[in-house]
Image 1: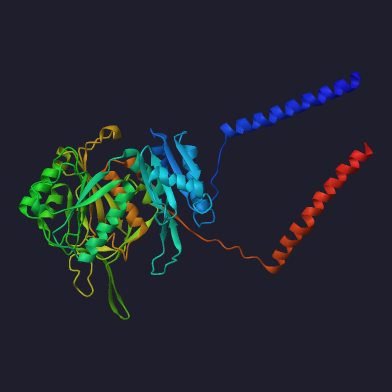
Image 2 (image 1 turned 180 degrees about the vertical axis):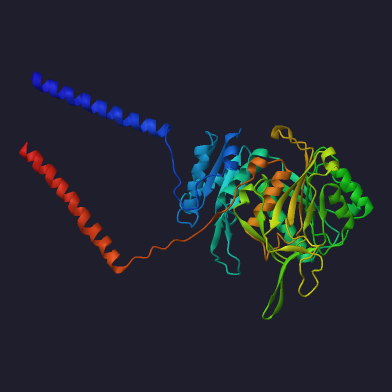
Length: 481
């Protein structure tokens, strides 16, 4: 009996210690663990911009994944939302609701939010503020007219972080876009406004048209003013209004120049701030066997020193239509006295130059043309200082020597990201710059017939045989004992 009691006590102690070790290891691994994103494009790694925002999140946010479990984007979206939850310091709550199977929970969500949920997507809530992201806003599809276009890029992080900003900040910012001065075409103006409006919904600002001829001043509530592709110049009165707006303590301008527009007064205003539109065309020309060839669409690279374009520095882009080069003055004494800082953002690749005689059949770069440092976009900041915490009152302006960046037929995702980053910079949201879409790639594994046979026999015969042998060895050892 004493021996049996000692054996039983020994077993009980071993069981208790084993359970304690088991739960202890699980507890430690739950609180202290490291996760790795092994996907080729780092699809499930949040950008530093999102991580910075989550780190300073001061309000509780609820995110609901309302995409069917068998939907194409369910797995990727749910995994991404888990990253928000894990990095949200307990502020972000995530749940998944299948609208086709979890009917009761879906109806409850409809009642709580007032949304119809007639399509799949993601619901982001903070207090009483709600933002619904349709499933189509999570992706960028290939161009075409087909109803089922292939997914080119997944932009879930961009859309979800923008929705977080929307519901946490509450009040939307206001941008005004100048109208009534002509455009390349009416359709181009409408396309630009639609593209900017889409960015506004994502970046939590509203876009309003403004005709400077009908107002006495730029509205006081303007967080930014957009001048896109003007064909006709601003009047002296309108230029004075623009100067008065720029003289405010906090002003923001996005100016996209149409090279064929006649805008000398606008050009003079930009020149005062260190950026001179040259009125040329950036192009590449060569003589071929079939005759002279001129190429106006410009291949360009982004600057890697500016916070606006640093995240795009590894990418190249193409500026569609026609572009004019910008002459930038970096060391001008007047600019230094006015505390104005000019910085290049986009430059043409080496094969292109700024050509004054662009109407010639075969133009050749000469002394009056720009052969090196062909700048296509620049930033201007007035009142800039080194300390980022004190820069909220600086005036900021982006100038682009191309008005076709947002055209629907030629728009590139990287150009959209550039405009989005520029608007965030104008709004003093540097910490939100750097969220880029993740490219979608399909990988195919090609197996020969012999490799297929090896996999078949390994899984159906070899592996089960190994498990059977191990079982027989354990059984034999116990019988021998």
